[in-house]
Image 1 (cartoon, rainbow, N blue to C red):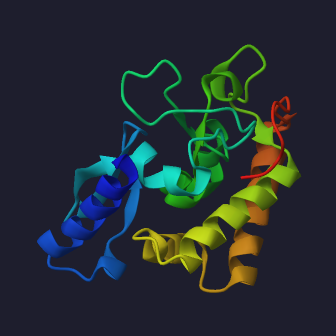
Image 2 (cartoon, rainbow, N blue to C red):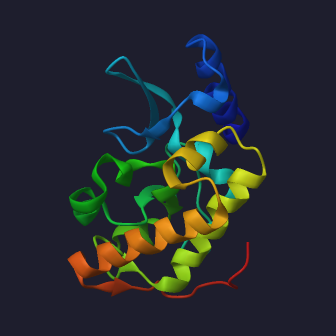
Length: 188
């Protein structure tokens, strides 16, 4: 129900702004757990990032597949993580580091636990998983489809190239790679 509500808020926002839902550009707000729309220099919260992103992840951490929750107040509430770390991403991606293409849901351990990701660049195999996630959302005509296309490119090859370039730039800048500790079978 949280995911459906999140998708509906995206569509309602497009209607309220008198825009095609394909023209609404959504990104993470200052509080990364909220998605915002910018119009005429003003930013407005639309829906929870967790609600909108959970459809692909189905209640599992993007990195280790541990159960996560999107319900506020839950003990295992998912963190909204910048796949390309926010710490270095703004240096070469600017505000695009807050784009939907770069946000995933992670358990607390993978995002900021003792051996968590923090500002390290995820392994290349995880970049492929991010690309597959973005392609899934685009192909499913999710309300975030147009935003993903605008942020990453019009073709699968352009999107893959953009992700690869962002990943390599982050790796060059931040140096350290990170791979999660496997906890469950690697399937969604």
